[in-house]
Length: 193
Image 1 (cartoon, rainbow, N blue to C red):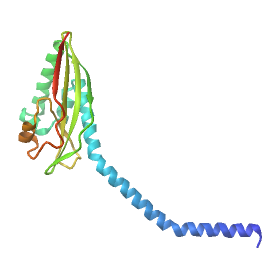
Image 2 (tube, one colour):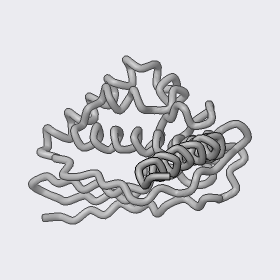
Image 3 (cartoon, one colour):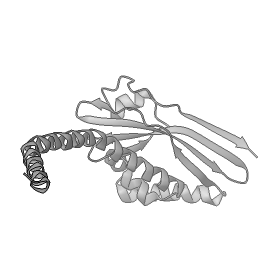
């Protein structure tokens, strides 16, 4: 057999070997893709919650009442008299702050806690630090956003935790909350200029 014919036989043999291995490669690829999708699905609720918390932090820095209300827990909005009333309350509060020269310099999110579960409700705490100033003072708030989802992390709503303590969280938002994950630190510091 000539060298050329021998090379052709080797190539054909290699192709046949590749075809024989193909079902194994396909099976391995399907398993790998399914595993990756499982990991992505496991991370997805936290990523969605983080995306909403980042939008809330930006809306807070911009004092955008409409965007804040859209991200708030519907029960809180309803208790205030509905979305229109809640937007009005926040807009008035923000106008008062602006009238005395208050400016929000930054809202910085810290590392989120692990996701907790209370029955069918998922929740995550997002620590934040807000720095604001006027001509007379500098205010630093260290608190958290409580993110709550009742649909396995597909949709997240938020409550500002500046005024929340463990008892309020248990009574109003998460009846089964037992301190896990623990509440992030809450503190307000005011410095006169």
